[in-house]
Image (cartoon, rainbow, N blue to C red; front, top):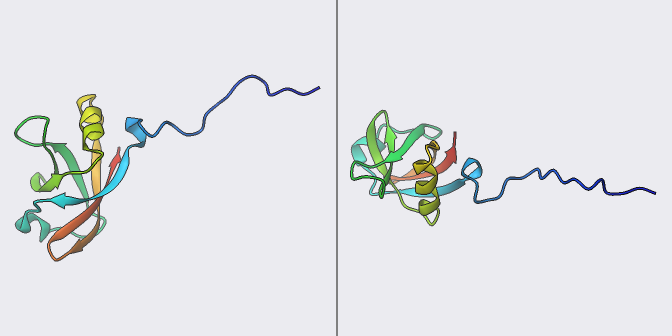
Length: 105
């Protein structure tokens, strides 16, 4: 007689996990002087803005490219408050607007 073994090894982390948090979004209030330097596939640093941990921004070589505003923002901030690190890869640049994929590193 065969049994199930009684153990379960889940292969996927829950979607609420900081390590699996990933989403595509458009930069809010993109800064034209920084956006002009960007290319598709560039990787931006995702950090808290100067005003504390309410605002999250994407930086290119230390200069703010724009803000991160998305339904996932609360989860992103919570994870960043736990010292998790994220970056944003440029997916598309069109008429000064920048679409990025935010993901854990």
